[in-house]
Image 1 (cartoon, rainbow, N blue to C red):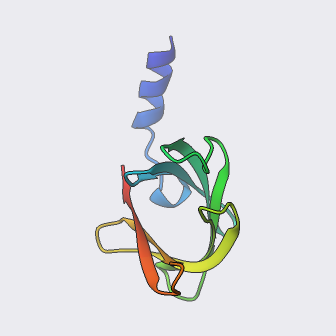
Image 2: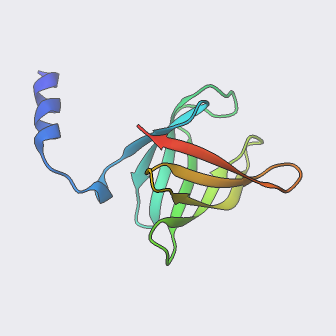
Image 3: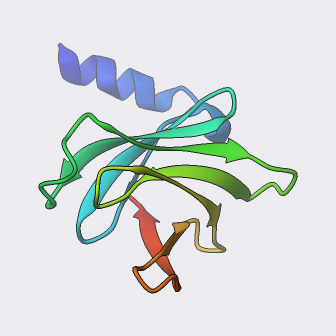
Length: 112
């Protein structure tokens, strides 16, 4: 049965580096999937009409700093915005975005 297969999968120890993880904030949920360059984010749930389930939300590319990434992130206008992101001490993903006045705001996604 399906449940037995899922249980046996969970018992196999996997390194944190090669697993997909779910992140979310009040508006968006996504899966962060490891890639050769870093990670790719796929939308799993959205309360915003601009973001559709299954779409690529963004890419995180590694930098010389272990927790800091060059990020290409889909903004509310549907364009990919080049910015930076990092994992904070709680393990949440923080993405820098500029508002219309050019001020830096942060999007914080909590690891589920």
